[in-house]
Length: 456
Image 1 (cartoon, rainbow, N blue to C red):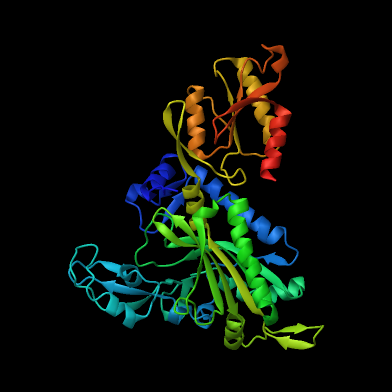
Image 2 (cartoon, rainbow, N blue to C red):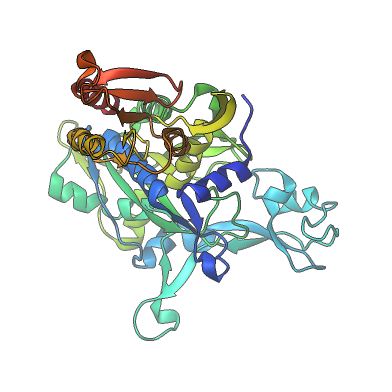
């Protein structure tokens, strides 16, 4: 399977209203992107589907929405203030700054190892071999809370969403009274002052995460870990429609894992820029609750009524970035083929995540009877799902191509046969399939049923 180039995806995303550079009229700002009309629908559909599968369809997983700014003691206890770092090198010649591990082509962040690997590496900006020794750089974004900007008012924009899950563990437990195992899930923004944001929405300074922390007795860790690995894989393949050949498992070596992690697996997606991390499943042991219990002095242990034991739960984490899943969905759905004697581009989104589920169109916009009937059909289909588009601009072929490029699964055309010009076709419509370009006659009720089944 030949990969589409990142430049092609970026161009399509801009042209069809998926993603725009943030503050573009002022020259943009590296690491920040705005989602346009089609992009926000795609992202929201992905988030809603994840939330449905992780929270709403589970009996023991609860949702939260934590504040972006928390007490800075949280990030001290979690180790972020001291250790949320990337290895940085500067070029003595041009002043360019780069991720040392990226230049070295390794996942290691060991400064001694990186120094050795980079001793003959040139700066990618100017080509000179004048890099400084690697050093650690903290990626947390600082701000101030209150009217005075001094050390006493320093706070941080959260670098991950997991922190507010762990500090709400006791609140969820006390309010919902769950028994182990149970989970807490969250979708929210996080901020990382990346050294070199790049690769479109893959590596950014403002990101959105979908995370779930599953609290368990330690004896369940292997069984639960494997079940959430399976969940991640199945979600990508069965719900998002990602092709199996586009993804693979990567198990973290000891030098890749966080010091507290007993196991870590990532699903790698074959992005346009190569195979990279998409979705992580991690066994965090009891590190997080233990750290916050020690730092806060609040008892976070769990008392098991059956065994009469008190202990700190282990945690299995399932974590994925919205932007990366968005880019994976667009990249995997991108297709080019020859249809009707000319090359066309289309996005083969699964209907569940497609920004528009169907487009309704009168064959001719200057025929009031066709327009009236088309609006009637659209109103009926919008009762199945609200994302039913209207398009009467240009000829029907151009309308189809526009919908192909935003990934609309079906185009529904109202013509004179719909009005009874051919009596046996009265109240039927022409339905065009995005992936094949094939057209067939269907009744409006059949179209509605098809939509219901595809979006279930």
